[in-house]
Amino acid sequence: MIQADITIWMIQGNPVGPSTTDAVWIYSLTYGGGIVSGDSISCEFTIRDGCTAVLTTQASTKVYKSLGSKCSEQFMEARVGSDALFAVIPDPVTCFSTARYSQKQVFRLASDSNLVIVDWITSGRHERGEKWDFELYKSTNHIISDDDQPFFLDTVLLEREGIASMVEHMWNYQVIAMVILWGPKLRHIQSQVQEDVRRMMSEQLHMPSGGLSRHAKSNSDPNSRRYFAKPTFIASCSVFGPKGSGVVVRIAAMTTESVYKFLQHELAGMEPLLGVTPYC
Image 1 (cartoon, one colour):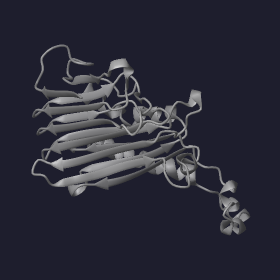
Image 2 (cartoon, helix red, strand yellow):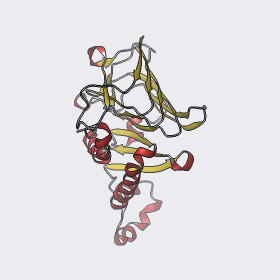
Image 3 (cartoon, rainbow, N blue to C red):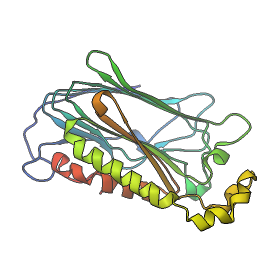
């Protein structure tokens, strides 16, 4: 088991990006570049009042094959102070064939804390023909007030059980992702993301009236979906929390590159806060 406790104060030194930005960037590293069967990693962060911290990775988090029923685990708890910003913007998790992986992230916020979470997974090692070939993937995210009131409780569970395989359920989608934006410093980004997702999906899912009438008779046919091309990128957006403090975006995409481009574009407005644009 690996454990770490990190407290972010107002750190003096060379900032990331312009001299007007004071953000601490933290890179999460693992021995051998991945997580092996049975690993258990635990981290705690405290972001003090008025501070800005970024937690990221140098590459995708690789989860190697499981030995028996052993599950690799990661747990993180973060406390974000008043007027502070914590951005958790890693590269995606990539589970190898037969891997078993579970992670949980708990964020405790003050009333005016700011938080960005990007949580995403790819289908596996495409070059080796592995697509949704792992045994278990579980990701839990909790956002809680400093007086223990829950704002956001979410779990994604992918498990290779039952009649239909994960490959059948995913249809050709190779990435699923979730993006959470919370707090007053991110209002302009929240508004832009909601507008962009609304416009994007309206364009992708728009169907000319002629196309609808041409295939209207096929709607009762269980195979009728073959008449309509699946969008290569699907996103939904919703508001949560008191007074709409948070926005959550959920994504399914056929390529990892398309998600990177989406994140780079939508989080570009964070450059003044973080020093650089995320995912550049």
